[in-house]
Length: 304
Image 1 (cartoon, rainbow, N blue to C red):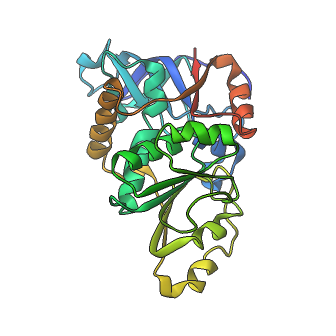
Image 2 (cartoon, rainbow, N blue to C red):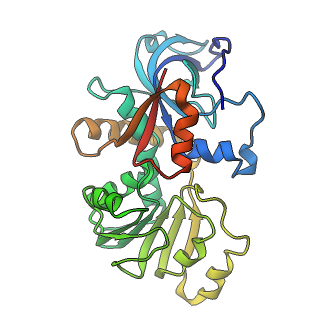
């Protein structure tokens, strides 16, 4: 990764130009950079980044001029966000509350909706036991908070250290396991929200209760084994479910409404953006290295 100069883009019909104030560094950025998901591979010149916050400075044809001058959160797609001037479709832009900082908005803008709809996708209900695998990232922290608010019977987390576990208890976790799933906690779960996937995925599927559901919201640990589906077949009589989840499958209006609701909730202190560090855009490679090394609790944010 290197810093370079590119021309300031012009918004096309249906697009806006955002002068960025904050840029979220998410797990999906690292997955794309590594080529973990083949369909999201990139070539030289690719600009990472999927969410930014800042001020709309220009709009394309068909976009209301009223957007100009407004502070917004914006989704830039699978790339295009690590810039001083970002392009986004107007349908992927949400106005920010006055009392929510741009830094906090890119910490919650993707994470909170993913957590919300992943629990919905899992058909989670109050009283059920939940495991959040890879809970120290921004999505995992949001899942813990939302599950606690919704009345989960227990919330178990996997994380890399007791210190991180202690911090997660502050957000609602009731039990802490290591990355391998070992520790003092439940042995089976009704719902697992998994950010990691990787080689150990089958061992966690085996820990589902009858009718248990596991939802993959990330693959930061790499893809699962090619034959991971065999564990489902081996437990056929337990009626287990395994699914993936992407916000791309949620209707835009529902996505935007939910995102705006969580921005307002953050202002009220009902959900908490957790920022590990704020770095200049020129240190984006360092941010990715720290993610690869497992050093980030919450989210790193870049500023131009």
